[in-house]
Image 1 (tube, rainbow, N blue to C red):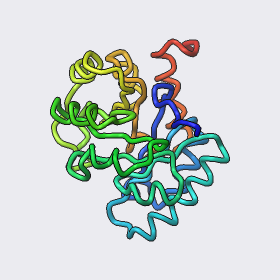
Image 2 (image 1 turned 45 degrees about the vertical axis):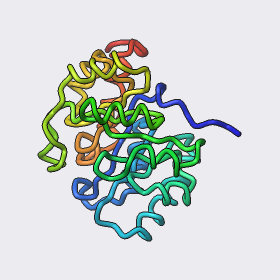
Image 3 (image 1 turned 90 degrees about the vertical axis):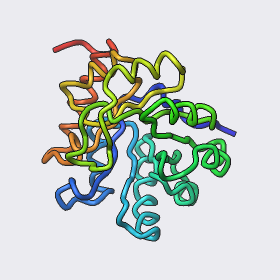
Image 4 (image 1 turned 180 degrees about the vertical axis):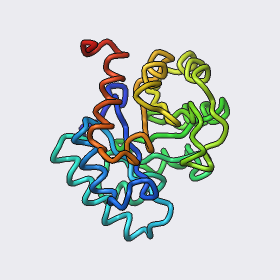
Length: 221
Protein backbone atom coordinates (compact mmCIF):
# COMPACT_ATOMS: atom_id res chain seq x y z
CA UNK A 1 0.00 0.00 0.00
CA UNK A 2 1.24 3.45 -0.89
CA UNK A 3 2.10 5.48 2.19
CA UNK A 4 0.87 9.00 2.93
CA UNK A 5 2.53 12.08 1.35
CA UNK A 6 5.54 13.70 3.01
CA UNK A 7 4.55 16.92 4.85
CA UNK A 8 8.22 17.81 5.13
CA UNK A 9 8.10 18.78 1.45
CA UNK A 10 5.20 21.22 1.77
CA UNK A 11 5.61 24.99 1.49
CA UNK A 12 2.12 26.51 1.64
CA UNK A 13 -0.92 25.13 3.43
CA UNK A 14 -4.15 27.15 3.18
CA UNK A 15 -6.93 26.82 5.77
CA UNK A 16 -10.45 27.86 4.79
CA UNK A 17 -12.73 30.24 6.68
CA UNK A 18 -16.06 31.22 5.10
CA UNK A 19 -16.35 34.25 7.38
CA UNK A 20 -13.32 35.76 5.67
CA UNK A 21 -13.83 34.57 2.12
CA UNK A 22 -16.10 37.34 0.88
CA UNK A 23 -18.92 35.01 -0.06
CA UNK A 24 -16.70 32.56 -1.91
CA UNK A 25 -17.29 28.85 -1.23
CA UNK A 26 -14.68 26.52 0.23
CA UNK A 27 -14.36 24.95 -3.21
CA UNK A 28 -13.72 28.29 -4.91
CA UNK A 29 -11.16 29.27 -2.27
CA UNK A 30 -9.45 25.90 -2.70
CA UNK A 31 -9.34 26.27 -6.49
CA UNK A 32 -7.73 29.71 -6.24
CA UNK A 33 -5.33 28.63 -3.48
CA UNK A 34 -4.15 25.71 -5.61
CA UNK A 35 -3.81 28.08 -8.57
CA UNK A 36 -1.49 30.16 -6.40
CA UNK A 37 0.68 27.15 -5.60
CA UNK A 38 -0.67 25.84 -2.29
CA UNK A 39 0.18 22.17 -1.91
CA UNK A 40 -2.43 21.58 0.79
CA UNK A 41 -5.93 22.90 1.51
CA UNK A 42 -7.71 22.30 4.81
CA UNK A 43 -11.47 22.59 4.90
CA UNK A 44 -12.43 23.98 8.30
CA UNK A 45 -15.98 25.04 9.11
CA UNK A 46 -17.52 24.98 12.58
CA UNK A 47 -20.97 26.06 11.34
CA UNK A 48 -21.70 23.68 8.44
CA UNK A 49 -23.64 20.49 9.09
CA UNK A 50 -21.76 17.18 8.67
CA UNK A 51 -23.68 16.57 5.45
CA UNK A 52 -22.64 19.95 4.04
CA UNK A 53 -19.00 19.42 5.01
CA UNK A 54 -19.11 15.98 3.38
CA UNK A 55 -20.42 17.35 0.07
CA UNK A 56 -18.00 20.27 0.01
CA UNK A 57 -15.06 18.07 0.98
CA UNK A 58 -15.93 15.56 -1.73
CA UNK A 59 -15.73 18.29 -4.38
CA UNK A 60 -12.46 19.66 -3.01
CA UNK A 61 -10.86 16.21 -2.84
CA UNK A 62 -11.84 15.59 -6.46
CA UNK A 63 -10.25 18.89 -7.48
CA UNK A 64 -7.08 18.38 -5.44
CA UNK A 65 -6.51 14.90 -6.87
CA UNK A 66 -6.85 16.21 -10.43
CA UNK A 67 -4.21 18.82 -9.66
CA UNK A 68 -1.89 16.55 -7.67
CA UNK A 69 -2.55 18.51 -4.46
CA UNK A 70 -3.90 17.48 -1.06
CA UNK A 71 -7.05 18.04 0.97
CA UNK A 72 -7.13 17.82 4.76
CA UNK A 73 -10.39 17.81 6.75
CA UNK A 74 -10.45 19.65 10.06
CA UNK A 75 -11.64 17.62 13.08
CA UNK A 76 -13.97 15.26 11.19
CA UNK A 77 -11.94 12.06 10.85
CA UNK A 78 -15.03 10.20 9.65
CA UNK A 79 -15.55 12.65 6.80
CA UNK A 80 -11.85 12.64 5.90
CA UNK A 81 -12.03 8.88 5.42
CA UNK A 82 -15.42 8.94 3.68
CA UNK A 83 -14.24 11.39 1.00
CA UNK A 84 -10.77 9.80 0.75
CA UNK A 85 -8.98 13.02 1.71
CA UNK A 86 -5.23 13.01 2.36
CA UNK A 87 -5.89 13.16 6.08
CA UNK A 88 -7.41 14.96 9.04
CA UNK A 89 -6.22 17.70 11.38
CA UNK A 90 -7.31 17.78 15.01
CA UNK A 91 -6.97 20.36 17.75
CA UNK A 92 -6.14 19.79 21.40
CA UNK A 93 -9.67 20.61 22.55
CA UNK A 94 -11.36 18.71 19.73
CA UNK A 95 -10.06 15.13 19.77
CA UNK A 96 -7.65 13.05 21.83
CA UNK A 97 -4.52 12.71 19.70
CA UNK A 98 -3.83 9.06 20.46
CA UNK A 99 -7.47 8.14 19.82
CA UNK A 100 -7.35 10.08 16.55
CA UNK A 101 -4.32 8.11 15.38
CA UNK A 102 -5.97 4.83 16.34
CA UNK A 103 -9.16 5.68 14.43
CA UNK A 104 -7.55 7.18 11.33
CA UNK A 105 -6.18 4.58 8.88
CA UNK A 106 -2.39 4.53 8.75
CA UNK A 107 -2.24 5.70 5.14
CA UNK A 108 -4.06 8.91 6.08
CA UNK A 109 -2.12 11.88 7.44
CA UNK A 110 -2.80 13.04 10.98
CA UNK A 111 -1.99 16.63 11.82
CA UNK A 112 -2.11 17.79 15.44
CA UNK A 113 -2.24 21.36 16.74
CA UNK A 114 0.58 22.21 19.13
CA UNK A 115 0.73 25.37 21.22
CA UNK A 116 2.76 24.22 24.25
CA UNK A 117 5.08 21.42 25.33
CA UNK A 118 2.27 19.27 26.76
CA UNK A 119 0.51 19.27 23.40
CA UNK A 120 3.80 18.61 21.63
CA UNK A 121 4.49 15.56 23.76
CA UNK A 122 0.96 14.24 23.18
CA UNK A 123 1.18 14.74 19.42
CA UNK A 124 4.58 13.06 19.14
CA UNK A 125 3.53 10.16 21.37
CA UNK A 126 0.34 9.66 19.36
CA UNK A 127 2.23 9.32 16.10
CA UNK A 128 1.23 12.57 14.38
CA UNK A 129 2.50 12.95 10.83
CA UNK A 130 2.94 16.70 11.12
CA UNK A 131 2.55 19.40 13.77
CA UNK A 132 0.43 22.51 13.34
CA UNK A 133 2.43 24.84 15.57
CA UNK A 134 1.06 28.17 16.67
CA UNK A 135 -0.32 30.71 16.78
CA UNK A 136 3.12 32.07 15.95
CA UNK A 137 1.96 35.68 15.74
CA UNK A 138 -1.19 37.45 16.93
CA UNK A 139 -4.19 35.80 15.25
CA UNK A 140 -7.15 36.50 17.53
CA UNK A 141 -8.46 39.17 15.19
CA UNK A 142 -9.61 36.42 12.82
CA UNK A 143 -9.67 33.43 15.20
CA UNK A 144 -10.86 34.50 18.67
CA UNK A 145 -9.91 31.15 20.27
CA UNK A 146 -6.37 31.20 18.86
CA UNK A 147 -4.80 32.07 22.21
CA UNK A 148 -1.62 33.96 23.04
CA UNK A 149 1.05 33.95 20.31
CA UNK A 150 3.79 31.39 20.95
CA UNK A 151 6.39 33.30 18.93
CA UNK A 152 9.35 32.19 16.88
CA UNK A 153 11.19 30.90 19.94
CA UNK A 154 8.59 28.16 20.36
CA UNK A 155 9.11 27.07 16.75
CA UNK A 156 12.83 26.82 17.56
CA UNK A 157 12.07 24.79 20.71
CA UNK A 158 9.81 22.37 18.85
CA UNK A 159 12.47 21.95 16.18
CA UNK A 160 15.02 20.99 18.84
CA UNK A 161 12.70 18.38 20.33
CA UNK A 162 11.41 16.59 17.22
CA UNK A 163 12.12 15.90 13.57
CA UNK A 164 8.42 15.84 12.70
CA UNK A 165 7.42 18.31 9.99
CA UNK A 166 6.35 21.68 11.40
CA UNK A 167 3.50 23.56 9.74
CA UNK A 168 3.52 26.96 11.43
CA UNK A 169 0.24 28.89 11.67
CA UNK A 170 -1.08 32.12 13.12
CA UNK A 171 -0.73 35.64 11.74
CA UNK A 172 1.67 34.57 8.98
CA UNK A 173 2.13 36.84 5.96
CA UNK A 174 4.50 37.09 3.02
CA UNK A 175 6.55 39.55 5.05
CA UNK A 176 7.09 37.40 8.15
CA UNK A 177 7.01 33.94 6.54
CA UNK A 178 10.81 33.86 5.99
CA UNK A 179 11.45 34.35 9.72
CA UNK A 180 9.15 31.40 10.46
CA UNK A 181 11.07 29.15 8.07
CA UNK A 182 14.40 30.29 9.49
CA UNK A 183 13.13 29.42 12.99
CA UNK A 184 12.69 25.81 11.90
CA UNK A 185 9.27 25.44 10.28
CA UNK A 186 8.98 23.35 7.12
CA UNK A 187 5.81 24.99 5.86
CA UNK A 188 3.49 27.89 6.66
CA UNK A 189 -0.27 27.62 7.04
CA UNK A 190 -2.31 30.73 6.38
CA UNK A 191 -5.92 31.73 6.75
CA UNK A 192 -6.72 35.44 6.50
CA UNK A 193 -3.62 36.45 4.50
CA UNK A 194 -4.93 34.34 1.61
CA UNK A 195 -8.63 33.64 2.20
CA UNK A 196 -9.56 37.27 2.87
CA UNK A 197 -7.56 38.60 -0.07
CA UNK A 198 -9.45 39.97 -3.08
CA UNK A 199 -7.00 37.96 -5.22
CA UNK A 200 -6.52 34.63 -3.47
CA UNK A 201 -4.23 33.11 -6.10
CA UNK A 202 -1.92 36.12 -6.10
CA UNK A 203 -1.76 36.24 -2.29
CA UNK A 204 -0.98 32.51 -2.12
CA UNK A 205 1.71 32.82 -4.77
CA UNK A 206 3.39 35.69 -2.94
CA UNK A 207 3.59 33.78 0.36
CA UNK A 208 4.80 30.58 -1.30
CA UNK A 209 7.55 32.51 -3.10
CA UNK A 210 8.63 34.03 0.23
CA UNK A 211 8.85 30.54 1.73
CA UNK A 212 10.82 29.18 -1.21
CA UNK A 213 13.23 32.11 -1.06
CA UNK A 214 13.75 31.50 2.66
CA UNK A 215 14.53 27.87 1.85
CA UNK A 216 16.93 28.96 -0.87
CA UNK A 217 14.90 27.21 -3.54
CA UNK A 218 14.29 30.12 -5.88
CA UNK A 219 16.30 33.17 -6.90
CA UNK A 220 15.62 36.46 -5.18
CA UNK A 221 14.09 39.09 -7.44
